[in-house]
Image (cartoon, rainbow over all chains, first blue to last red; front, side, top):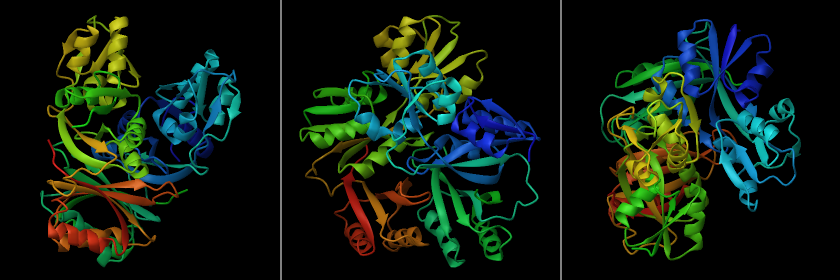
Length: 266
Length: 266
């Protein structure tokens, strides 16, 4: 367990709440954006970082994938963390709803049904809650922990488009852990070495031949031109398994493969 | 050409600027989020809508893909539109930089190099520009058109991480156009009928057999459980081509295929 865990803050954000639940004995440091979590992690041997990577309803967290490509880190473990958005306000007839863009999207049906309400996107759910504590015309969407901390009254707990809402977070580190090759899942970034048709098909065919199940594929723009991508791929199984090691060794003969390691999901 | 074009506003957003450049004779209506563009388009036979679908540096616009799954629309054409972010402020020593999350990400290197500057995420680049016109401590990142409209002075034109920055926009409609089957590109949504390993490999293999080049594949969460997806796929070629029609006909025997149509990119 690392001495310091760096999370996407501020305090009482979902990232912070997760670290608070799982790493109670570590120091938790909040930074203001996902890129800064990666930056702090690669600059500090003793710290790990926690960032959201995918929400069950909204899909991938783009910023995390762009930074996985940019910084050299490994993944220590993943957490499937239940997101329970609540609406909190110190007045029932609020005129503004504030939150981060992700919870606003996750609660879009509820929000759309509100009449004459101004929707304001702010940088975090905690920030929204803080503003709701200062201004009675504001209702904030965030976590119950945040509402409780800022002393804002929870007025609706059933505002999400779906009952079940899970965000996957990953813990990242600069250094390879001892169990780098062990875990239920292995993540990697695959970069085609040449721009030609059918390369993705060929990559998938190697996993298929070795009977390896892909659970996720994400196209990440290279930034060089439109529709030019590297691929982030999650597979079932750890690097210690021969079929996984064989597939990756062969893939490396025709594409670039950066492995983030094998790890378990909590 | 439709009588009314609905865009992601407010006025002088990049979506608005594009409509203003290409549809000068149509009425342009601004709505406040991407979901509302889709909603207005399906409710109005006479209107088309313009939404961003992918940025060359940041990748896919998640909200557009989620709405392509939710609403029944076709794609009339696509535009590769050059984004030229500029920094504007009425004072050189501003203390805040405001913009929408996308331009903030596109200019992250420039922003990171600024010292003692507060970064504020707002709902649009136009909103940022409006605030910069009212408050001299604010510098806004947005388009030159917006700066000019709000009377804010352009102080830096070289703030993007990359020189070339293109966003692809699509024009959507409720009704199939006459040229639904003609165009350089065909887009579709593919939904696996059962949850089993290797289905994506099988889908890609059909395109490969027919020598059809995929230019884009995007995993869109179904919202049912983590890592459960439908796939948005762009291929080269129009539906009028026999190999394309054959591939899609065969795909329909084992997966659900919703075709958005064939169209050209401008």
